[in-house]
Length: 273
Image (cartoon, rainbow, N blue to C red):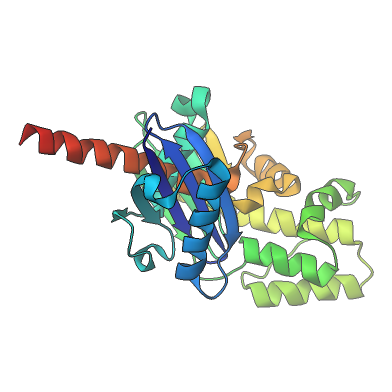
């Protein structure tokens, strides 16, 4: 059995997926990026191989993607995260793969909207990477200011009993100041969390409209685990969105699948020659 690794080195997390030659996911691991991307990526890959019972030398082909893809010199190939995300989304959604036409991805420092055609090819995309507002880091900062865990945000959202509070700043720093001001004015943590989610949702909807709103919406990235944010985006779009079982690894899984195709193409080409 041959194994293929997809390594997605992001600004806040390293995600690695290993697929077999049939493109089935056999293992994945997520660790913090830290300050030494290269070292941590190698350590994460080695740990993951140990967990699934193979050696690093058993990896036939490695594809790197994401923010730090160029630093992983041992990769056989590095590709754009847009392409890897699109391929991974359709693979992760399995029986619903043909229905996926729009991808929403929220990462640590940016957010993206990707439009796909009937065959799953990327036809358009939009990205917001100018400010942390509307990203995973913004959610982390909000949770810290509210003195709760990020994992509690979804629960707090659904406990809100009022109208979602308006948070208008497009800059993460000013938005944090707004949140502190709302706390000072005796607004509840629950209502503030709900307001934060809706402020992010409104930004995401603007991105999606730039590429064209289509049915079959897939949401990935760490913030997709936040049920409150999912609820806010669905309400703003007036559409149901699909959340995969492991939303953080969609792009690394797509990279692993690309590795299978690249390896097969190269070896078929060699055989023909």
